[in-house]
Length: 65
Image (cartoon, one colour):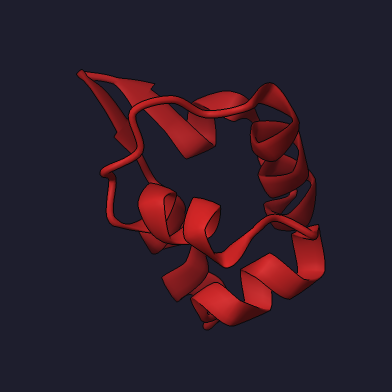
């Protein structure tokens, strides 16, 4: 199972789903699915945009558990 740490990263930055969607250009639905950890698949471009926004590595965002 892959765990997504988007909610934690957003909390540390005090960002809302709308803020992340606006800053990255990702759809609100994509951000919501990742935030709630209900996404079935993720586009690599989305992962890249999130990593750039939060200045983190892929391993900081996604974890194989």
